[in-house]
Image 1: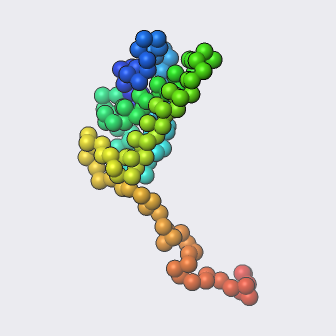
Image 2 (image 1 turned 90 degrees about the vertical axis):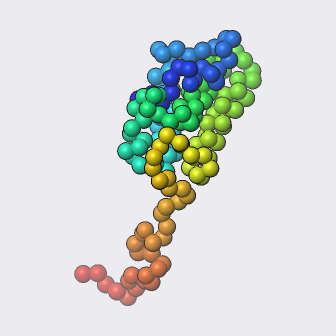
Image 3 (image 1 turned 30 degrees about the vertical axis):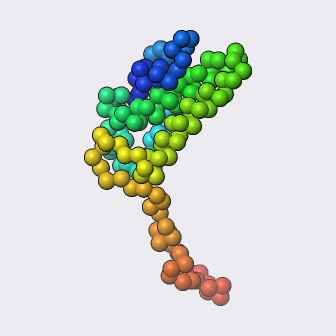
Length: 146
């Protein structure tokens, strides 16, 4: 399920010498989807994430993140042996994408197209685990188990 279309990706590639095609973007789409859904799994419900089945159904900011990720990986793969500074461009696009995801997770960027209350921060604390320090010792050394 692609999250970005060719236009979303190619706008982050140098148009004078390198553009991705539909035949080339498949594996990159899969990786981008996995990373994006992984980052956002604690922010949006799985139903919301699963509803992003095509670029047209995907929020614009997520399309932009996916486009940057795919462009970074594609550019690195295509020019890694030819251009000595390929890392700088690829790393910049990758860091932009991850930075956007981190801002979404932190609640600083909102997906306007999503009508859902988002959860930010870590929603798990020590009370979610048992036994925990809140209830005292559960058993002592001198106790025997039958």
